[in-house]
Length: 511
Figure 1 (tube, rainbow, N blue to C red):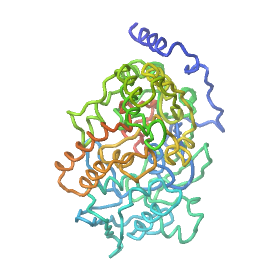
Figure 2: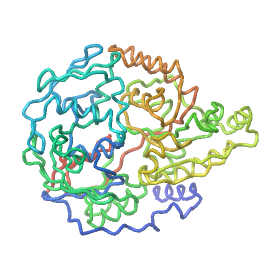
Figure 3: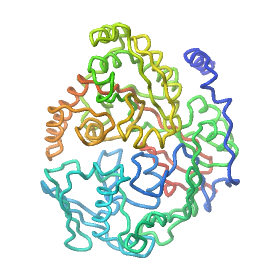
Figure 4: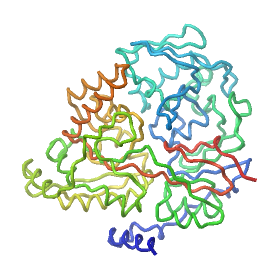
């Protein structure tokens, strides 16, 4: 009875808009039947896909999780401990303007070539220079790399970089030997050191992988993996229930009861790392005016979204960053919900009659994005801001004509991070990316100082000070973290990760 009441409240909250219902959506046609999960094969129906075979032409957590089956990073994060551990790297040492990495021995690529320090240097250089790379900003301070032997890499930076391990997170190593052999066609072969080998790929279709039986680490149980992009929420749910897929991501909260009661599937939930927020490009009107940006902040009530859209499966961010990340400041609070104050600020900014804006979002990337942006538009209207939600496919939304090209003035987005530096550097540090176009000299000074200090307590204090500046300048509206919700076949033994990666080598099949 309580859930029926909650569902009715949600329908009322959305004004019974049929446009947002899942019932009218149809499951996509599948190219061929995908068998139920077994040790021979698992099919993942995913909201996103590898949009190209260039491993550096993206910067999205779920896509990292797909690539990580084939390619591997030097380091990975233990989220429970909030610390890094080695994958291809055995150990590392911070020496001011230098980082020294010792590589694990005995690792080979899928082509049989030994993994060495030359591959690390080649990979980082490509991330820095590839015109299609969306990861180059992570290595902007790298001035020199040396390989004194096959298993040692020395990376020199312009200034001491205490956060360099975070820059290496999700940065995958590729084979220099493969590049020498295949040249510009090397990506078509997708050769890495990972637990799975590349078989085939179709844009917006299937990515097929097979187990690497010569893998240097523990061998996965499952032989073949199929990733299929299914952008529609209803399509993923229908595919899971029909046995056409074994794992799906971004399960709608109103579908949780149905999946929980189904005999073949179950629900996996974990508190996510991704903070959702509204971004305002400070170089584009009307968001070049701080008063307008502050007005937007005063309009928004995230608790209403969590309650009515996500049925309580979320956690409001009370300040610029969530409470579970390094750099959180408990004394720094978000703007209160005050539409009257918003109208006063708009009038002071010269918009006595309000403003009209477009709010961009990607429904195939972020759960319930369409409903959320409509609710946000309703909240903004109360503060004098007439808003038109604009839907875009993720490849357009995220590309050079969208977020990463600095072309969108106002958009709904999410970013996972365990260290505040990751978020601040990518969105607010001058010249790092074009995503927001924000620039503040004092904020930049604090960022530079915290990035160069090895004293963690001092670094956190500097991040907190930077947080006070960015909240005052208001180039964004912090919203919430959500529970990451997955649908999983009951015979698949797997625990969801907070970073949105679906790693099949972590799975086992119940007989």
